[in-house]
Image 1 (cartoon, rainbow, N blue to C red):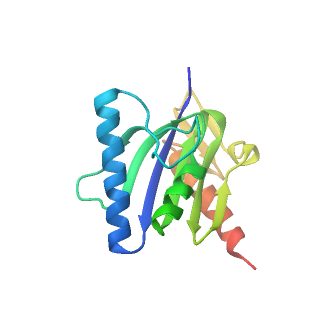
Image 2: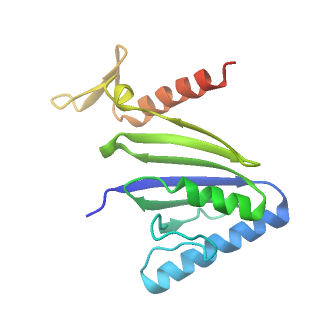
Length: 160
């Protein structure tokens, strides 16, 4: 049984191209709801990396959330961006396997920032308290801690 990786993609670019991306994702969402099977765009040549549980918040345009098995499907997301000439920010997490990060992609250039095992070891969960401890502070969830750690890595990546 697969661990599920949560994904969020935000596409940006020309209005017509974004409309085409929107239509692609809505069609995949409809096909999944109809068939019960994971989806891939027909122009992607892979036997893996399917989109499952596609979801769009009402009013969002070019922003989708979905699940993948075990790890993110960044290569498929980049193929979609290339096909329609748009940029994309792909955020993903599967904390059971210490996967947490994001990839920015535009014009054939990608910048990937991921947390590693050492990052996950920087905080602890106290089961008796039901709290996470990180740098002298207590947190009810590890989500905020992971965001802090990722933001630090992004800032380190951006430094010349």
